[in-house]
Image (tube, rainbow, N blue to C red; front, side, top):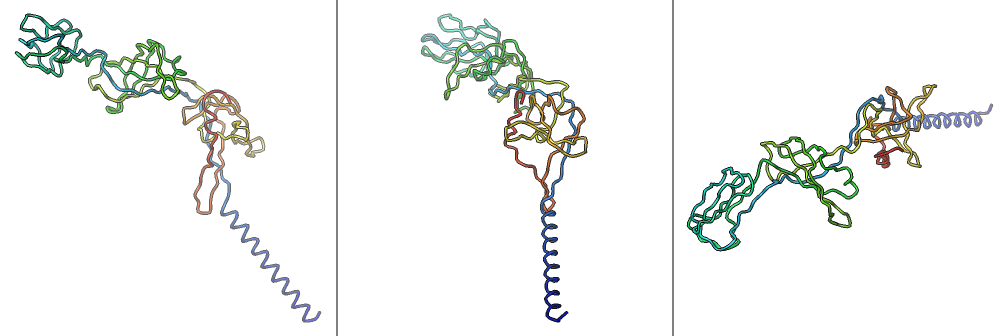
Length: 297
């Protein structure tokens, strides 16, 4: 073989070796930069409860603003601010012998007159507030009104004191108010007595919406959706291969989902995770997650 042919052959061998090396490096980098791993979770039996939620402020059920009905001279004030009075108690006497009485049980607040003072008709003399019987008025969308029945118990969260107390629906308005094209009705919730409650405190009223007990559940993040918005999960088949499995779902509380079919209790469910070369994992964003809210899918 001539020296020229040997040189040419050697050149092609070197080129081939370099090409193979480049391909090997590229494949290695590709595998390192993006490899598929799976997280897993076991389907569990649990209870799921969803709630209606309404907001409002603590108010008194009874307040009396005591006003003068005509020109009068105050001769005697029989109460002091902070004093508790009963319905029928004489609050003020006038120079002509008239008596102004309490119409409710409550505490005297804001005495605005003094003895021997002459006042005009319509003057606010004092107020009586019942701090023992409190309530919350909440606005209810017309489509939720069927869930609020008179006498039904509710849970009331008072954020300022970090406390939950019981409430009971005492009434519902018969006429709605239209706000921004939506009709709202007013529901009144009576509150159980609690010394820490103050008028004006913000409150959240919770009422059970849906409840599922002893059902198969999965975290919402493990539910995925196909192009037709049908839910499915990833699990192993009889060949130990991870495959897509169609499911049907029920209610969810924003964290876990009721699985009505397609998964059994204790079954291991997988979630595909992309792992980058830096070792950081991330979950794929699932814009269809709202699809599991509510009824069957």
